[in-house]
Amino acid sequence: MSGPRILEVRTKILKANDELARAMRREFERLGLLVVNMVSSPGTGKTTFLKETLARLAARGEACAAVVGDLETDNDARRLAESGVPVRQINTHGLCHLEADMVAKHLEGWDLAGLRYLFIENVGNLVCPTSWDLGESVRLALLSVTEGEDKPLKYPGLFNTADVAALTKLDLAQACEFDHALALANIDAVRPGMRVFETSAKTGTGLDEWLGYLANRRATLRAG
Image (tube, rainbow, N blue to C red; front, side, top):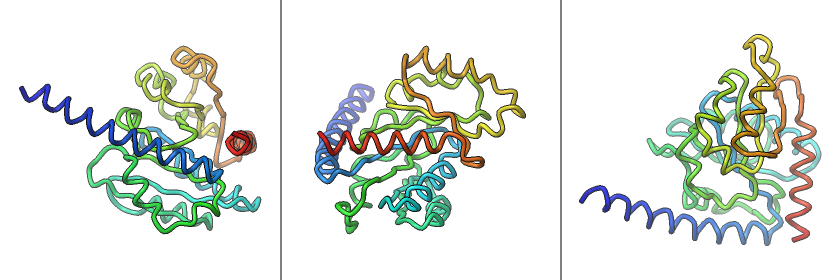
Protein backbone atom coordinates (compact mmCIF):
# COMPACT_ATOMS: atom_id res chain seq x y z
CA MET A 1 0.00 0.00 0.00
CA SER A 2 3.03 2.31 0.30
CA GLY A 3 3.16 2.87 -3.48
CA PRO A 4 -0.36 4.30 -3.92
CA ARG A 5 0.00 6.38 -0.73
CA ILE A 6 3.24 7.96 -1.96
CA LEU A 7 1.63 8.70 -5.31
CA GLU A 8 -1.36 10.35 -3.63
CA VAL A 9 0.86 12.59 -1.50
CA ARG A 10 3.02 13.55 -4.47
CA THR A 11 -0.08 14.43 -6.50
CA LYS A 12 -1.33 16.72 -3.74
CA ILE A 13 2.05 18.40 -3.42
CA LEU A 14 2.29 18.99 -7.18
CA LYS A 15 -1.26 20.36 -7.26
CA ALA A 16 -0.50 22.82 -4.46
CA ASN A 17 2.71 23.85 -6.22
CA ASP A 18 0.88 24.42 -9.52
CA GLU A 19 -1.81 26.52 -7.87
CA LEU A 20 0.79 28.75 -6.23
CA ALA A 21 2.81 28.96 -9.45
CA ARG A 22 -0.24 30.09 -11.42
CA ALA A 23 -0.91 32.82 -8.85
CA MET A 24 2.73 33.91 -9.01
CA ARG A 25 2.63 33.98 -12.82
CA ARG A 26 -0.46 36.20 -12.80
CA GLU A 27 1.27 38.63 -10.45
CA PHE A 28 4.49 38.63 -12.47
CA GLU A 29 2.54 39.34 -15.65
CA ARG A 30 0.59 42.11 -13.94
CA LEU A 31 3.88 43.74 -13.02
CA GLY A 32 5.32 43.29 -16.52
CA LEU A 33 8.09 41.12 -15.05
CA LEU A 34 9.60 38.48 -17.33
CA VAL A 35 10.64 35.44 -15.29
CA VAL A 36 13.09 32.90 -16.75
CA ASN A 37 13.61 29.45 -15.22
CA MET A 38 16.99 28.03 -16.23
CA VAL A 39 17.35 24.24 -16.12
CA SER A 40 20.35 22.06 -16.96
CA SER A 41 22.71 19.44 -15.61
CA PRO A 42 25.54 20.45 -13.25
CA GLY A 43 28.53 21.86 -15.09
CA THR A 44 26.66 23.14 -18.12
CA GLY A 45 27.83 26.67 -17.42
CA LYS A 46 24.48 28.18 -16.56
CA THR A 47 25.94 30.32 -13.76
CA THR A 48 28.50 31.85 -16.13
CA PHE A 49 25.82 32.22 -18.82
CA LEU A 50 23.50 33.92 -16.31
CA LYS A 51 26.24 36.16 -14.91
CA GLU A 52 27.00 37.47 -18.39
CA THR A 53 23.28 37.90 -19.12
CA LEU A 54 22.78 39.91 -15.92
CA ALA A 55 25.84 42.08 -16.53
CA ARG A 56 24.78 42.91 -20.08
CA LEU A 57 21.21 43.72 -19.06
CA ALA A 58 22.45 45.93 -16.21
CA ALA A 59 24.80 47.73 -18.59
CA ARG A 60 21.78 48.56 -20.74
CA GLY A 61 19.95 50.00 -17.77
CA GLU A 62 17.57 47.04 -17.48
CA ALA A 63 16.57 46.32 -13.88
CA CYS A 64 17.02 42.61 -13.20
CA ALA A 65 17.64 40.17 -10.36
CA ALA A 66 18.23 36.49 -9.80
CA VAL A 67 17.61 33.69 -7.35
CA VAL A 68 19.81 30.62 -7.53
CA GLY A 69 19.16 27.14 -6.20
CA ASP A 70 21.79 24.73 -4.89
CA LEU A 71 21.78 21.90 -2.40
CA GLU A 72 24.38 23.70 -0.26
CA THR A 73 26.75 26.74 -0.32
CA ASP A 74 26.20 30.23 -1.68
CA ASN A 75 29.06 30.02 -4.18
CA ASP A 76 26.92 30.64 -7.25
CA ALA A 77 25.04 33.53 -5.64
CA ARG A 78 28.33 35.25 -4.81
CA ARG A 79 29.55 34.77 -8.37
CA LEU A 80 26.33 36.16 -9.81
CA ALA A 81 26.44 39.15 -7.45
CA GLU A 82 29.64 40.22 -9.21
CA SER A 83 27.36 41.36 -12.04
CA GLY A 84 26.15 44.14 -9.75
CA VAL A 85 22.49 43.05 -9.58
CA PRO A 86 20.50 41.76 -6.59
CA VAL A 87 20.92 38.01 -6.05
CA ARG A 88 19.55 35.63 -3.44
CA GLN A 89 20.58 32.05 -2.72
CA ILE A 90 18.13 29.21 -2.11
CA ASN A 91 19.63 26.16 -0.40
CA THR A 92 17.47 23.07 -0.81
CA HIS A 93 19.50 20.89 1.61
CA GLY A 94 19.29 17.75 -0.50
CA LEU A 95 16.19 18.46 -2.58
CA CYS A 96 17.00 18.10 -6.29
CA HIS A 97 14.79 20.95 -7.56
CA LEU A 98 13.23 24.27 -6.65
CA GLU A 99 9.55 24.61 -5.81
CA ALA A 100 7.23 27.57 -6.15
CA ASP A 101 6.97 28.25 -2.42
CA MET A 102 10.76 28.37 -2.11
CA VAL A 103 10.95 31.02 -4.81
CA ALA A 104 8.04 32.99 -3.36
CA LYS A 105 9.66 33.02 0.10
CA HIS A 106 12.98 34.28 -1.25
CA LEU A 107 11.28 37.07 -3.23
CA GLU A 108 9.78 38.58 -0.07
CA GLY A 109 10.91 42.14 0.48
CA TRP A 110 12.04 42.72 -3.09
CA ASP A 111 10.48 45.54 -5.11
CA LEU A 112 9.36 43.33 -7.98
CA ALA A 113 7.50 46.24 -9.58
CA GLY A 114 10.87 47.89 -10.10
CA LEU A 115 12.30 44.92 -12.02
CA ARG A 116 11.99 44.01 -15.67
CA TYR A 117 13.63 40.58 -15.55
CA LEU A 118 13.90 37.90 -12.90
CA PHE A 119 16.06 34.81 -13.47
CA ILE A 120 15.76 31.57 -11.54
CA GLU A 121 18.81 29.33 -11.75
CA ASN A 122 17.41 25.94 -10.85
CA VAL A 123 19.30 23.13 -9.13
CA GLY A 124 21.56 21.29 -11.57
CA ASN A 125 19.44 18.30 -12.54
CA LEU A 126 17.96 17.02 -15.81
CA VAL A 127 14.95 15.22 -14.33
CA CYS A 128 13.40 16.62 -11.13
CA PRO A 129 12.98 20.31 -12.10
CA THR A 130 10.89 19.45 -15.16
CA SER A 131 7.83 18.63 -13.03
CA TRP A 132 7.81 21.84 -10.99
CA ASP A 133 6.25 25.03 -12.29
CA LEU A 134 7.84 28.11 -10.70
CA GLY A 135 5.53 30.69 -12.25
CA GLU A 136 8.00 31.45 -15.02
CA SER A 137 7.21 32.94 -18.42
CA VAL A 138 10.16 31.21 -20.09
CA ARG A 139 11.81 27.88 -19.31
CA LEU A 140 15.30 27.67 -20.78
CA ALA A 141 17.03 24.30 -21.20
CA LEU A 142 20.81 24.52 -21.45
CA LEU A 143 23.12 21.94 -23.04
CA SER A 144 26.89 22.35 -23.13
CA VAL A 145 29.17 21.01 -25.84
CA THR A 146 31.08 19.11 -23.13
CA GLU A 147 28.06 16.93 -22.30
CA GLY A 148 27.60 15.16 -25.63
CA GLU A 149 25.04 15.42 -28.38
CA ASP A 150 22.69 12.71 -27.08
CA LYS A 151 21.48 14.45 -23.90
CA PRO A 152 18.16 15.55 -25.50
CA LEU A 153 17.42 11.92 -26.41
CA LYS A 154 18.36 10.62 -22.97
CA TYR A 155 16.43 13.31 -21.09
CA PRO A 156 13.54 14.30 -23.37
CA GLY A 157 11.41 15.55 -20.48
CA LEU A 158 13.61 18.60 -20.01
CA PHE A 159 13.41 19.65 -23.64
CA ASN A 160 9.71 18.80 -23.91
CA THR A 161 8.90 21.17 -21.05
CA ALA A 162 11.25 23.97 -22.18
CA ASP A 163 10.27 26.96 -24.30
CA VAL A 164 13.75 27.55 -25.72
CA ALA A 165 17.19 25.96 -25.49
CA ALA A 166 20.77 27.17 -25.43
CA LEU A 167 23.94 25.42 -26.49
CA THR A 168 26.69 26.66 -24.20
CA LYS A 169 30.51 26.68 -24.21
CA LEU A 170 30.70 26.79 -28.01
CA ASP A 171 34.31 28.00 -27.68
CA LEU A 172 35.14 24.43 -26.59
CA ALA A 173 33.25 22.68 -29.40
CA GLN A 174 36.27 21.83 -31.54
CA ALA A 175 38.31 20.52 -28.63
CA CYS A 176 35.39 18.33 -27.57
CA GLU A 177 34.79 17.12 -31.14
CA PHE A 178 31.23 18.26 -30.68
CA ASP A 179 28.87 17.29 -33.51
CA HIS A 180 26.92 20.51 -33.82
CA ALA A 181 24.48 19.31 -36.49
CA LEU A 182 23.70 16.12 -34.57
CA ALA A 183 22.99 18.01 -31.36
CA LEU A 184 20.55 20.32 -33.13
CA ALA A 185 18.92 17.35 -34.86
CA ASN A 186 18.48 15.57 -31.52
CA ILE A 187 16.87 18.63 -29.94
CA ASP A 188 14.56 18.95 -32.93
CA ALA A 189 13.67 15.25 -32.74
CA VAL A 190 12.47 15.73 -29.16
CA ARG A 191 10.95 19.20 -29.54
CA PRO A 192 10.43 20.04 -33.23
CA GLY A 193 10.92 23.68 -34.11
CA MET A 194 12.16 24.82 -30.70
CA ARG A 195 14.42 27.85 -30.93
CA VAL A 196 18.03 27.16 -29.96
CA PHE A 197 20.57 29.85 -29.05
CA GLU A 198 24.16 28.92 -29.83
CA THR A 199 26.26 30.65 -27.22
CA SER A 200 29.58 31.13 -25.51
CA ALA A 201 29.64 33.26 -22.38
CA LYS A 202 33.42 33.48 -22.73
CA THR A 203 33.44 34.99 -26.24
CA GLY A 204 29.96 36.56 -26.20
CA THR A 205 28.75 34.50 -29.13
CA GLY A 206 24.96 34.39 -29.36
CA LEU A 207 24.31 36.57 -26.30
CA ASP A 208 22.95 39.54 -28.25
CA GLU A 209 20.47 37.22 -29.93
CA TRP A 210 19.48 35.85 -26.52
CA LEU A 211 19.00 39.33 -25.07
CA GLY A 212 16.95 40.31 -28.10
CA TYR A 213 14.69 37.34 -27.51
CA LEU A 214 14.21 38.36 -23.87
CA ALA A 215 13.30 41.91 -24.87
CA ASN A 216 10.75 40.65 -27.39
CA ARG A 217 9.21 38.25 -24.88
CA ARG A 218 8.90 41.01 -22.30
CA ALA A 219 7.30 43.34 -24.86
CA THR A 220 4.78 40.61 -25.68
CA LEU A 221 4.14 40.06 -21.97
CA ARG A 222 3.37 43.72 -21.41
CA ALA A 223 1.20 43.90 -24.52
CA GLY A 224 -0.86 41.00 -23.23
